[in-house]
Length: 177
Image 1 (spheres, one colour):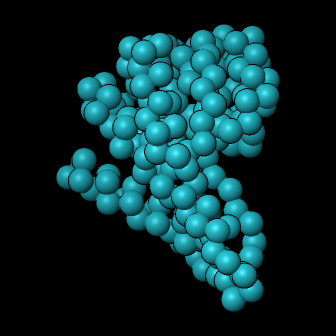
Image 2 (cartoon, rainbow, N blue to C red):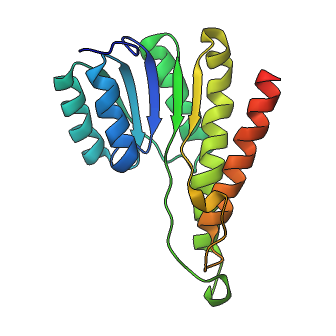
C-alpha cells in the first residue's frame, strides 16, 4: 500500500459491479478504504467485494437500484450504520441504450435512463449530503462527454448526463460559493 490517501476513508460507490465503478473500488481497496459497494447485480458485487478484501479494503455490499429513492436512502443509512460516517460518495451508476426518440413506441426506456442516470445521483446525494457536510467529505459524479456534446441520436442518455452535469455544477456553486 504505497499511497494511503484513502486509508480508512468511507467511500460509497454506486454502479460498483463493473466498469468504472469496479475499477475505482479496486484502486480504493488497495489504499485501505472502507467501501460500500452498490449496484443491482449482487453476484458481480460479491465478486468485486472479494477482490477488494484481498487487496486490503474493508467492504460491505448493498444491493441497490438507484432509480428507487428508498433504496438510495437505505444505501446511505446502512453505510452509516456500519462505518459511522461517510467520507466520499461516488455517483457512478448509469446506463444507456442508443435509440432515436422519433422511433420510440413508448417512453418507458427513456424514463428509465433519466431515472437511473440523473435521479439516482440526486437521490444518493440528497441522503448523503448531511453526512458529507459533517466530515467535509468528497462528492463525485461520473458523467460523460455526451452531457456536453450532442450526438446523432436524441436519446435519454445524453439528456440525463447533461442534467447530471448541470445539477452537480450548480450544487458545487451552492456548497462552495
